[in-house]
Image 1 (tube, one colour):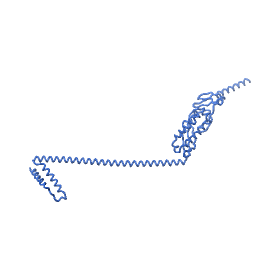
Image 2: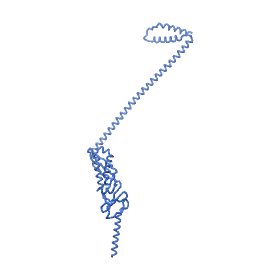
Image 3: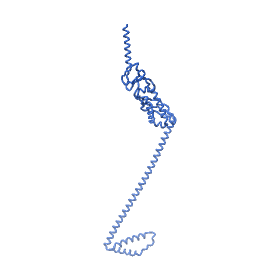
Image 4: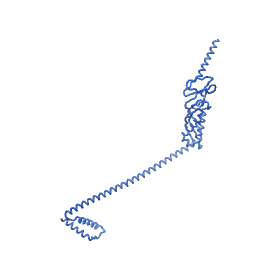
Length: 320
């Protein structure tokens, strides 16, 4: 009986030893870590892999963790990966006293597990409240129109402020994104009317610009047409004048040739060609004078008798 009790005690001790050893083995996954306290004081941070702790003397520190649905719970593991918090919409007053609802996304990463555990009592709640207050401060310095068109500016300001504030908590804020900016219904209707009026104004401006450009093009076309017509008339007049001048030259050359031939013919017959030519021109002149309707009486100058005498010479010339 004594031996049986001893065996039982040994078995119990063996089981306790196994349980003790098993409780002292901690397996840490990749991208996670644990905070170990020895007798209530920070001792070390466990890395990924198998780690040994001393039960009763050492224990893993529990931290508050936020799930994706916003529920908080306690866990003994700290996630070292980048995390995202999706905050609910909150009301923010802009500089021009417009109540606006804004919700934001926060991307952060724990870079120092010890600081995130001991420098802040509730890290998820602290980050959420800090983001909300910072968002109110940043948006409160901007008017509604500037808020709607300056998301990148707001994101940058939020990230800088949050990163500086959470640095002592061992947290690195990588970026902040504003999802929705929802002004009141009355403001939205006013903005829609304003945008519609702006579109109409732009349409009218474009229409006026088009009509103006069309008129300019038409006037330039008419101007160019008139220039082309004037240039054509000019070229036509130049060509006409050149043609008339050429015709006169040819006519003069023909008359010169005719006179030369007549003069040669008269000279061959022994007559004076000058008297002949003068007589011909004189007869033509008399013909033009006598052909006028207003001329009732024709008076011949004294010298005309000499010219008429030349006619006798012409008669003798042809008689030969």
